[in-house]
Length: 176
Image (cartoon, rainbow, N blue to C red; front, side, top):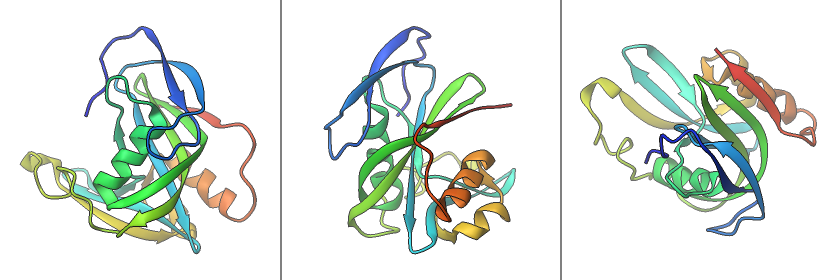
């Protein structure tokens, strides 16, 4: 589930996808890239609640982009593995660079599956003991600002956009 550790620029596909369809190409540095889905329904957002040695916190469903995999396809695959949902991945709304690795955040719309039925290794307990637990949850968009949701800037962007409209261009952040 990890991308190549290469630091060369590699063309990858991103954009609205269903299955393996991709509509445009960008270049990125492929060092442990991650892709995630932002799923909004009825004033709520789908997240993964994490419990581990660092405490309790929440993350958007997603994970590492596999070698040769498009970021949008990775977001759809990881959402199915973690939440049990089939999604149509829409546009890129945020790109975060964290510790030298790029993370892509896409809007996604549920088109099938059942929430909470993910069968990825982390969801069925097939992880080392120190990794903690992973639980699919829905939080209200207002809770994005009162709970430890990471990355915090993406959580704030989602909360702000839930009351208005998404900006045309993806937001780009560098996290320390």
